[in-house]
Length: 229
Image 1 (tube, rainbow, N blue to C red):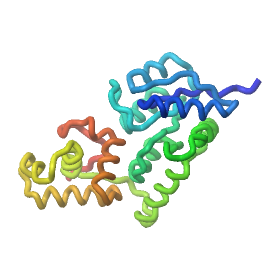
Image 2 (image 1 turned 60 degrees about the vertical axis):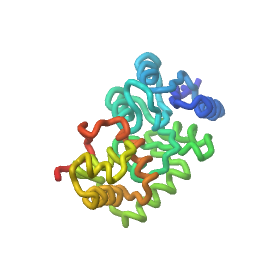
Image 3 (image 1 turned 45 degrees about the vertical axis):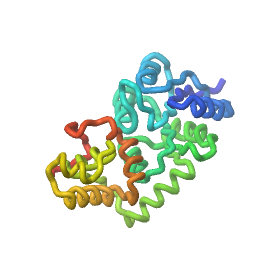
Image 4 (image 1 turned 90 degrees about the vertical axis):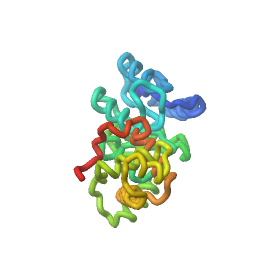
């Protein structure tokens, strides 16, 4: 009898959780063995339930282990034999690129047909990359905007500090007051960070910060995407 791939599904939206599970049930070689709604529950499941693949939402706040890239990095470090398929609504190309840089080879956008989840599971079990159509389009846009360059994005400490405060809800004027820098300097640092990340709109910056876990970090915390000033 053919081995069925054991899959854990994690998402903080019950409707998406159910939809992903139903989509996977259409693949006879896939078996959903557990579900989770946030990171605390997810890590407990992974510690107790044998699984081949994790299909997980990227933005899944509320748990002890956070969400976004910090959670994915934690799972990659502590569950080395587990394959990961990221399921997300975020379309920011820089964020998708970061997922690839930390070791995620399969990403499915929730706006695409959910059948792509099962296809992604089959691919990662063979150690092959997979991207659903919307994800491929976003990555293609990033390559075009970058002129083919693939260098990792490095933000200075001050740029990252400004980004964190901005996505926390502060205005450029409020940030300038708190950091004791001119409004022009803060605006320049914010715009420089966005250019480095390939972002054009504030909404894209919020998406990027959400996916990278920057929303959950204090302005004094450390982030590995920084460089000396």
